Amino acid sequence: MSKVYFVGCGPGDPDLITVKAKKLLQKADVVVYSGSLIPPQILKICKKAELHDASGLVREEIFEILKKNAQSGKLVVRLHDGDPAVFGTVREQTDNLQKEGIDFQIIPGVTSFLAASAALGLQLTLAGVTQTIIVTRAEKRTKVPSGEKISELARHKSTMVFYLSVQLLSDIVKEALRGGYLPTTPAAVVYRASWPDQKIITGTLQDIVKKVWAQKITRTAIVIIGDVIQPKSYEYSKLYDKTFSHGYRKAKNTLDPTK
Ligand SMILES: C[S@@+](CC[C@H](N)C(=O)[O-])C[C@H]1O[C@@H](n2cnc3c(N)ncnc32)[C@H](O)[C@@H]1O
Image (cartoon, rainbow, N blue to C red; front, side, top):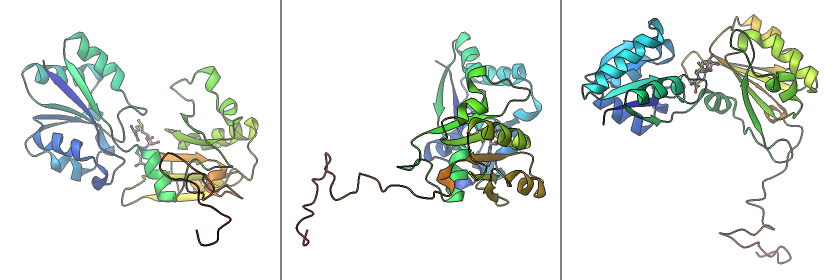
């Protein structure tokens, strides 16, 4: 059965591609890649592939390239930035391929919000602060379901991550405040995380918009809001606590100072 591989190539740093993705690109006959967010060094891994830049194509043209080449027995890769499952277009492609009897496999990649949090040196879930990460986007041309309005999601005061939204940062801030975050809540924007021209901007809901505008950042950025960025306090994990037993280790006897 013919097959198409949907491969995530990570956030930009060519060393953040998975070994599996690299092997597939080396063997691929045809690669359709997602435009400017795919670094040139990653395209160079493709030793013999015919390359197609999807940014200049419409859905039907992309589909035709995938279908025609898979049916003629070629190794076909549809290369997405980050992870294909996060704000990607995988489902519409895989559903249409399956209608033609073409199988598919998804190879995950490092999604850009994880590159952004790594660049900021963060732990996104912290005991005593939040155990939840909400990954979403602000609304513009693509509508967001009514139950997912930023002000609704903000009521949880968890860590919030926004893709595709830096140009709407002032709306995000307004809605986050309406939802109950304090104006002093830390906020951060990472532009082109893991690329050589990466930029990091940190502040609070009060000043982040001004700081980001000053840097003229209007695209390819992740916005993160939440106390995990600059926690006033947090709790140490139970896992490594000497009074805590689990499947692999018994609690130490804390009454005996030699243990
Ligand atoms: C269409 S979405 C694709 C997301 C991708 N599938 C992923 O997993 O990262 C494009 C958005 O991802 C974010 N993005 C992608 N690469 C980025 C990077 N290196 N640094 C910051 N944001 C990035 C931006 O919010 C951008 O508007």
